[in-house]
Amino acid sequence: MIKGFKQFILRGKVLDLAVGVVIGAAFTNVVNTIVKGLITPLIGALVKTEDFAGLYFKMNGSKFMYGDVLNAIISFLIVASVVYFLVVAPMNILITRSKRREEPTDPSSKKCPECLSEIPVEATRCAFCTIKVVEALPIENV
Image 1 (cartoon, helix red, strand yellow):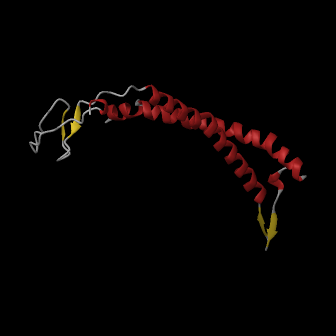
Image 2 (cartoon, rainbow, N blue to C red):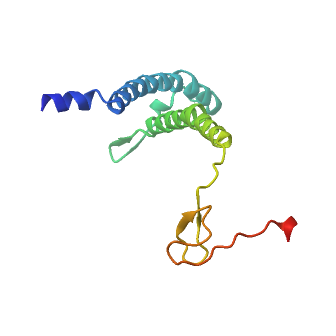
Image 3 (cartoon, one colour):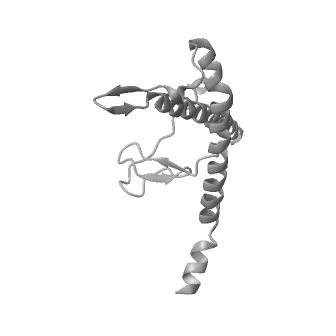
């Protein structure tokens, strides 16, 4: 039982996930600091308020902190844009480039025109329905 647990913990995916969570937490702290220290004051200067965290309204004795919600939305948008532009978009470009480099392989089988089963390319008769398979002649030979 301990051996199985040890194998589970030492799998690459579990370690990758743990590293991702730790890096994500550190990254979140950096983004929140950037939002709180730079972005929010910049936007606050435009709308003439010092910090969104102080924005609220009261209704029936309850305090609604909509400034905190604005800070959270700004932080989320920054995190989402950084993840998209620094992780997702480059990965999509790499995947597209790697697909372009793949050479198409010569097929080793073809479909029977009658029963649509897979038969070898060199076959002249289908092994399943026994129809004679005729290859289409190239246009210049017609």
